[in-house]
Length: 507
Image (cartoon, rainbow, N blue to C red):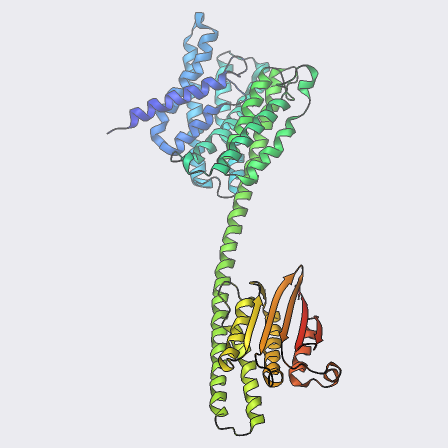
């Protein structure tokens, strides 16, 4: 099925509609306008449909060109009017064709690929718009519809009007996605968008004097809308930034035409020229910021994904390392266990057993590490694991652990593991020879920024004064770890052995 007629009719209708909107704020004789959205639509159609769009652009441009001329001088319609319409339409069509060729050839289909590509697009369309403005204004001058005095002013207005129209419309058509579904947008995001659009509209109306009249309506308050525009550019997609700029532009044009706002300077033509500059500069600046923001967010996401990927790889590697270290410790424990069977000397046998327990306390640490967290240990799981190894060897002792389920740093967990191991060994060795129901209480909890470790057995106790001068290898290790971690230790022996160590959380 030949789609050319449908495409042509559709383009003619939409182009005429855009042109009619532009003519509402046109300067006499009703052709040159501060914002000509039809130029942006024509370029978009030339980009999308290519040659199939040419006829529709030409017919739409011809009809909307002669419409204001006919309305102005209907009683004396001349053949020259149609020649003017044809000339202007040719200029508009050539401008759309040249613009589409330049974008496809030099910039590429994605004008938002980078800030440089968008700025290249923005600067080139200014030169592209020289085609339509030069041909159109020359045709109006030769047809005696404008004077030599107003030639330059009309030409500048036409040029900037086409430029503003392309900047506002072509990128929006490029960004528009007909498959959007509001139901798929999160309610919170949708609420914020609606709220920000309403706030932007209110602030823009206020800054252009909608809510007050007189001299106050001409105060330069237009900058009040910029924080909201920046918010759109930095936090939302480009289409929302464009819609925000479009809202500001529509309000600015309407209020300026009604002789209100900071751009009105007694002469409507001069006022519209100032307005054109504002729309063009605002669009280029805000969209450039939006592109930078989106690229920055995308780069941060890629960087975070890369960091997560490398962290996972490193975690797996370290997890494997811990597994291998644990296996080596198990090999050493197995070797010592076999050697222990051939040792007759009780003192040597005791040393071997104590050494095995120390090795196990280190080995059990390496079994606790997870891939997701390689620098911290769940202290409850760790302490319970150490206690279970002693329960297996000496079942008559009752253990009463009261451990908070908290995570601490790796180095601190090593210190606590060694200290607990040495305390239990000392209790087994010296405390319970004449005790009927031996028990050991182990507490670990957090108070504000402190970790508290408490150990209590109901053994025979010891002489504190004598212990200060001679406390053996086990307590040498305990004091060494306490000093290394800048902790505070208190030791007493009123009814058994009581020990309390306070660690700083920041250690």
